[in-house]
Length: 150
Image (tube, rainbow, N blue to C red):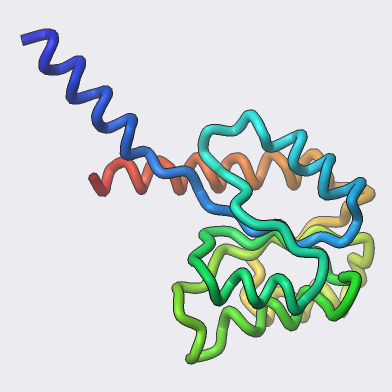
C-alpha cells in the first residue's frame, strides 16, 4: 500500500505547473539580475523575454503567460501599452497577473497602473527585494492552485 501512495504523490508533483512568466525589460543588467534571483524557484518559469512593446505583444499573442513582469520604459514603446493589449476583447488568453517594476515610480504612474489592473507596482531602486519575494509568493500560490486542480 505504501508504494501506491508513493506513486500517487510522485504523480501529483509531476502536475505541479510552474507559473509562466513573460519578462519585459530593456535593461540587460536588470533582466539578468531578475533571472538570477528567480532561477531557483520551482514555482515559476521565465518563458519569454522582450525588450520592446512590439516583441512583448507578439509573444503574448503566440502563447499564454500567467504573469507579466514588466517595466514602464522600454527600448521601444512602454509597458502600459503592453498591459492594455492583454485587456482587449481580442486578446486570445486570460490576462496575466501584472507586476510592474520601474525606475519611474511616480504617483501618476502608480495610479495609471492601478487603473489598468496592475496587481503589484514596485520601484526598482527601493523595492527590488520585496518585488522578488512577492513574485515568488504569487508563483507559489499559483503552483498550489494548479496542483489542487489535477
